[in-house]
Image (cartoon, rainbow, N blue to C red; front, side, top):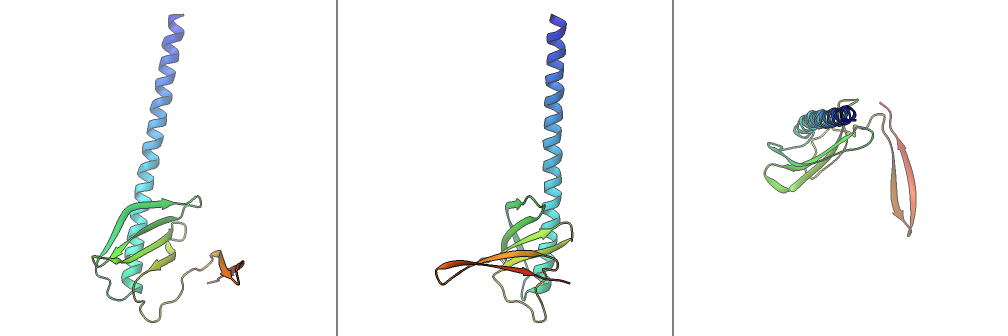
Amino acid sequence: MRKYIIILIVIIIAVGVFFVKHQYDKHKNEEKLVIEAQEHMKNYLKKDYKNVKEVHFSKDYNIDPTGGVEVSGYINNNKEKEFSGIYDPTNKEIGISVVNAEERQNTHLRMSGYLFCLIILQDSRYVSHTVQTYS
């Protein structure tokens, strides 16, 4: 009987160690993905927007079920110049972004291959619009 209790305790400890290791690895992978998203967002802002010298990221981030990473923050030490963007790790690009800054000329919407729906309040009813872009 004592032998079975010892075996049960060893199994419980092994399962616990496996679970903790799995959670640790998942957290490390998320950290790497967020750092990658921040780097791409920083490059995107500096390339496509005027007068972007510094980029500050908030500690909050969101990883959606499809793998997209949403990062946000502000630029040039001005908390009113906020931005938010979703990084697509599959295509290694910023898919959708909202930036409170002046765009450079000759930039265009970079949502190649994205299918999304816009819900617009029009005439006191919701109208759904589907947009497909191609590259």
